[in-house]
Length: 213
Image (cartoon, rainbow, N blue to C red):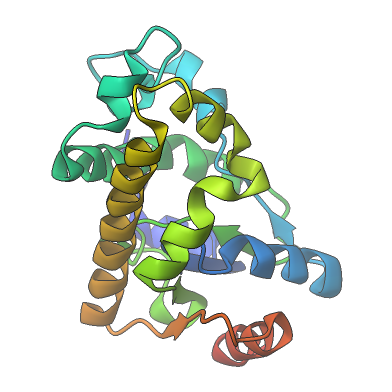
């Protein structure tokens, strides 16, 4: 199924998009937009969409699953894992956009989802998109130890060498983040680096300023 981009652009003109990699503050900013500005949001719930997919049409959405060899899954080549990360978001977008279209249009929506900008620029213009990113060091320090990633860490602890698996996983996420940031820069999309010294309120101000809010 393909939805006309011109129609999407008109129907989603109240949507603002926080793009970028992990540990960059996207989730924190989303909470600020919802709690302080009254925005709506939509979570990227892959498990919600998986029952409506098949391995042939949506191979990336079928993974990971409980029967995997977790050691092999988490330690596969970096390029292969990054390809899966990009593919799963692309496959999910067909369902995600439909859910966006079902949301009320009288309240603005803030979306927190890292994706190659080319996938959404046809209907989300640069002015309503911003890329948040952080350093490889910050990703290594934070990613697998966030409370919302506890389930991932629990599975990693079942692998043969959890410490090495975490190091390898950090390389995956750092590459994924860099590629999104580089693509955003190439497309002229505003970027903000989250550093340890950047206060949440200041990042929120910068994001709002870019959106003209």
